[in-house]
Image 1 (cartoon, rainbow, N blue to C red):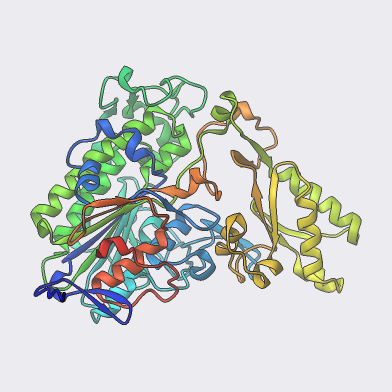
Image 2: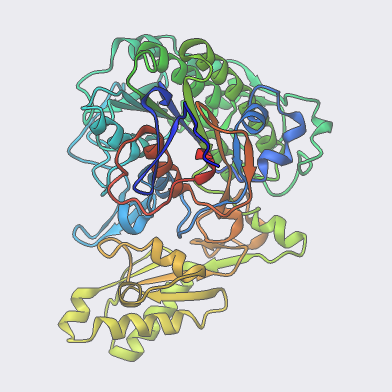
Length: 556
């Protein structure tokens, strides 16, 4: 029997899945929730509103087994991987910072001394741009594919959360400049000479100041937060002169303490008000830029940074973290309502994911008799140097040891006419003897071998030959890096991330809106599959370094 379908939005051409021109969304909305694990969608689900996360899960597609496939799982690498469709081995953003051999200093992922910050009241000689990103992004491809008629706007509290998703060709990236006294949104001279009128108008509202004129109490009665540890516990950092990390948070008194250290408006990064501020700015960007108002698909990237700062400060077990996610749910609901009204229900395509997860607070794990510990990096560096001195003679064999990567002094190795491969292997063989280290791979092996599974493959996916160290390390599950030898397990407060273990790699991925089917899948996928999926939906070329695959369920 031959079945003829008269009208369809799907075509299969040369093995590629494509959609008809008429079926394209007017606007793509990319949402990254910094440090949100997959389980947070379910841990707090009963208290979500019907119009936020629940709406996305109910009416969209939920990939329940989304995993990062590289190490390290950090903010800059995560945002770059989501939007490039590949891993640090190709896009080159191997961390939030890394050691640069040519300058012999640690550099930031978006730092650019050739640019200036635009719109700040803080006179500066530093700048930021996407120039360290080596491949194109899906947003770059959209700009190229529409002859640069599509608009791409990227917003976040963090500079890297805005710049990297926007790629090289974004119309603009904006982030929150907490160093400026009113807490303005700013950009870079890479994109513009001055801020648009609508951004200046938004800044003049001084919403950062307005939000910090309030206080933070829990959304629901505090005794009902049974999904979290007690509000008063030993695993959280106290803020702003408070003697304990407990509710309520009086912004007025806390601002005075922050003002003393020149960080008054950074306080909003540690409150749910930061998410609301960013939502307000994103909604204004969509309206003022006219995103999604014509037949050319536009793109807005929104990266919510507050959950990451809350996690680092209080930990994922805290009432503070739970309340921030519950309030973010309301912000997502407001965003969706605005999109329905301005772009139109069904006219926009939205995905939501995270740049990484987080490990439970190490002291919390230890107190509950779960695997945890500290990797004392300074002690490791001293021990390794002692070993190399005994093997090859006293010298400065180590240029930089940042915890997960050892950069050997290649000039000294060359002067001594030693084999770089041999010294790398000597260092790796020594480091693997340390109790907390479970893996040590050399740059030579990472360049010459092909690893097909497990942590070795994840290290290889995160390795870049021009930027990574000579030896890369893996630590035991639950073990975190510690640079201060005075810190004991009992003093660890707040969480961290960066490993290849499930607590850091397992993140949400929700799709919603234009032509997205309802459903869910437990098939293992990766965030690097997002960019090629969007490329297929929009019928544009993949980003240049793409190694992910389209998510087939979205096209069924």
